[in-house]
Length: 125
Image 1: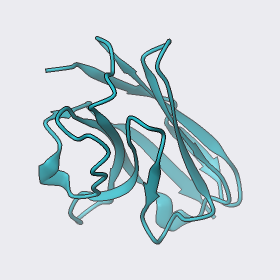
Image 2: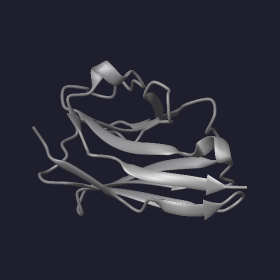
Image 3: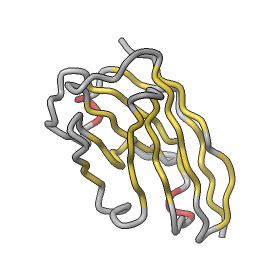
């Protein structure tokens, strides 16, 4: 399994922006899909965004137009650029890898086989 380490979380004011990073321990192959998920207090983990090996993307309805997922294969790093943040975006954010994906992008938690430890994002009003 690929090891994943998130960074970039912290506190931000509503309306602000933040970028999360996820460093992978090994190469990210074209067969992979890489995703971002969030888990708010007392709620289940849910999908935010996913990118396929061909660069195609899918976003959850709550973040469309505000969040952008990207992948730098050379750096083995996944990013999530977040803007227009609201207190409802407060959560622990996780990155995840699905190795045998081949662009079958999914925001379903159980489809992913490697997970990072998460990074907290807190948005204050």
